[in-house]
Amino acid sequence: MSEDSRSYYHTTDNGSRIFVEESGSGPLMVLMHGLGGTTNAFQPLVSHYSSRFTMLRFDFPGSGFSTFKTPPSVPEFVESLRSILQSKGPEEVPVLVGHSLGSIIAMHYASQNPVKGLVLIGAGRSATHIPAAVAHITGLAAKAREGIEGMRDSTVTNNVAPSSSDLVRTVVRQMISSQSPLGYAATCEAICAKSHVDPHYAKIQCPTVLIAGDQDKISPLSRSEDLQKLIGGESNSVSLRVVHSGHQQVLEDTAGVVSAVDSLLVSLSK
Image (spheres, rainbow, N blue to C red):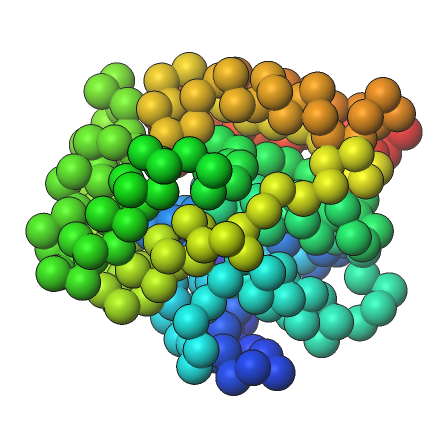
C-alpha cells in the first residue's frame, strides 16, 4: 500500500460509525463490498490503481470495523455513501466500484447523482418478491446469530469457485470470521426487507461495465445480462465482461477484473 494511505472513522447523521480507508492520489474511485465483505475484498484493485486514483473503500454499517445505532437498511447504506462523499466535497464526482451488495448501493446512488462511471461486480438485485430468496437470507441471519464460526466454511463453498486457490478461500474465510454476528444478521435482514427495492435503472446515465463470474452461484451471468438491458435504457453505454471465478471475482481473477475496469477507464478518457 502507498505511503499516503490513511484510515479514519466517519460518523453519519444517524450515528453509524463507518470505517474508511484511503490511498493513492488523483480522481476518486470508491469501492464497496458485498455481504460478509470488508475493505480487504478490494486490496488487489487498490494495489493496482492507487498510483492513478484516490482509492476510497469503507465497511458498510454492521460489517467489518463499522458499527450502527439503528438497524441498517439498503436506503441507509446509500445515505452512508452519500454522507462520505459529501465530506469529500461537492466537486468530487466518483467512479463507483461495487461488489454484490455494493453494486446495489452503487446503482441506487448513480440513479440519483452524477457519477463518472460504474463497475458492477457480481451485481445484485432486490429479491424481496421471491419467497425462497427471502427465506434463504433470513436463514443466514439466524445462523449468524448462532455464531459466525459455524457458517464460515459454507460461505466459502458458496462464494469461491472450485478452480480457485486455497489462498482465496483463506481470505474469504477470514473476512467472514471478522464479522459481528449481529452486524451480519442485520445486513441480511436489510437485504430482504421491503425497503430494498430496485433502483430506477433507466436513470443511470454513465458508462458502466458489468463483471460476471463464469462459476458464480450467487449472482449468475443471466443477472448481469438482464441488468445490461435495463441500465440507462437505450441511451447508455453498458458492457459485460465474464471472468473466471465464483462470486469473489476480484480475488479469484484479478487480471480479468483489472482488464474490465481498464476498458471502462479508457472509455472515460475519450
